[in-house]
Image 1 (cartoon, rainbow, N blue to C red):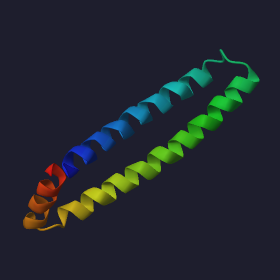
Image 2 (image 1 turned 90 degrees about the vertical axis):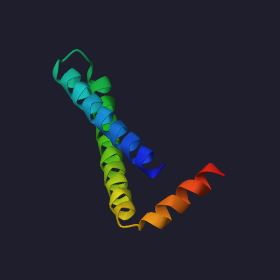
Image 3 (image 1 turned 180 degrees about the vertical axis):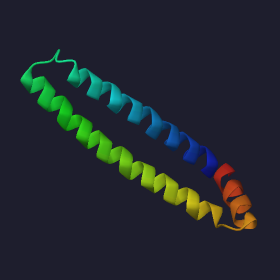
Length: 82
């Protein structure tokens, strides 16, 4: 269960990073007015900060889980199912 959460979160991080890059390319294309550029740039920065924090949290969770002994992992899975 924890593995699925970690893989899913890292997938979300990857997709969001690609979205940020696409939005940056849109900003460089000069097809937006000044207010739209400012608002989009602000949202890109906020989203980038959130993705960075999420990435760090997921990687920290992965390192923590790697240190758990096998019986704890098995017990955690049984508790999740019940």
